[in-house]
Image (tube, rainbow, N blue to C red; front, side, top):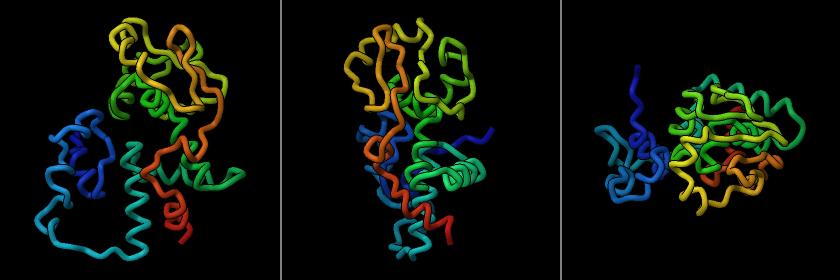
Length: 200
């Protein structure tokens, strides 16, 4: 199994992508210590072309949501076939992935940790166990965490406010009450550059 160095991914993009959760907020963060790309030529200044800038935005989005190239391309094609603005529709599809919903609810400190929770069977949708991280949550569905896991993070959840498209119920399960708007999606991503990259 290939180990992924998330800190190198952040350094390659030149900004914190928060791939390791709370560690990214500490002085141990690799971007805070070495704010240049990894590799022997990382410290040399480089000038991006317009194509390079668009590609970097696409790579950044892929890394934030933890997808490979084929998966990300499939999401883009799905978004381009749907009605509405392609960039927003793409971000909505990515945000509605079950692993991302679990992360947004605060059940896990990072998307990678959320993916593990889903894979290990800790997450239920409408009362049924779902262990597929790419499962697309739909408006009206209820997402919950297994009780023994929920007890461990109950205090932390009390301090959190979920995004507007998610709503906590009394038992700390959460309901998908709508689709995320542009303000609710990942602020680090410039979706128009991704659309331009694939439209070239």
